[in-house]
Length: 424
Ligand code: EPZ
Image 1 (tube, helix red, strand yellow):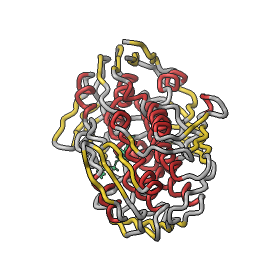
Image 2: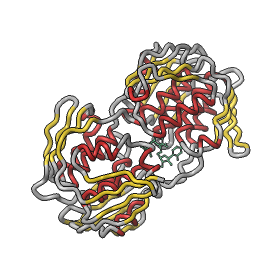
Image 3: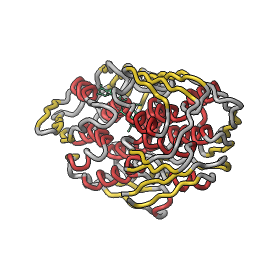
């Protein structure tokens, strides 16, 4: 297994290119199941979850090719030959986002079996809201032997769906199911994340009428089973990768620039960094962060977009250890998303937990240590702490990191960080 070895890094400098968003790419790959044509998808990030989803499409009987070579980030995906409607436990257990095949497979084939994703490090993460909503559209759902067995003998029918909680992949599953349903579907309390908006725009570009894109109330006029002519797709920039690298600049008090980024997707993150004292220069697709005279402590409550994202909570926890004073971080979306706290404390951080609220006392002088990655974003927080710690930090089990960050050691290394990937 690989691990990352990070030594204290002086100032970083230079420009880093942000990759395509993993959490936009995965629903896009699922949406190719709805297509009547081969679909060109570009700016795909070279991360494990995208490779896994492509493998899943192949398992279902689809095809994909890289007409412009492996490094192009571009795939031509053809699901016309899809003949298998079972997403097996073997693949779902490695990538819970496989649940995104449920809506499209059911809408297209009127029957499918998808393994229940099960829990993960950050929480139980049920999919009950996905299932209840599909039943509202006429699906018959049975859970047997750990699998969701869904049927809709006469196809899915438009319905009014009210999500009890805002769910990103739940909204995406229902948007894809509604696209092929008979009649109109209203989705109330829908997620508004940029990745959800991007999926709506792609389905709308194929001729499906969608009203309310970007709001929490969507109205989708289904095609009645007719597959979609999907236009060429370019994956939007990864706002969480971008936010993570802004924190890398912040925690090392460096001036760095990100390009190929969408600043409006990062407003809550930039707002918090500004409150902490960091400066910014922002254009339409570039962000430059500048050091703070003094890093001020911060109060954060994670919530749904456009509020502060839960996927940036761990990274800000690492940064808050360097603030002059006490920061408060409340995690409202997941019940167990503080796995990074124990590891940061082992590096010298002063963090006290009470329920889903952490108080971080800074400034703490961090020292390098052997630490364990537990989930995708926690891993990135440990890398950030390693950049600011004295001595050497080794982050183990970085397969978590490789699920969502493309070439992190190359990108940080190019900015001057002392970071190498080694084998255990
Ligand atoms: C998506 O997960 C993201 N993953 C997550 O990113 C992100 O943390 C999360 O949204 C919140 O923004 C992808 O897009 C692939 P939810 P998702 O359904 O859709 C509860 C990363 O680091 N819930 O919005 O699974 C759930 O338990 C990953 O890239 C139900 O109770 O999250 C949670 O408390 C981690 N029942 C809350 O809703 C359901 O049926 C939000 O979950 C569905 C969700």
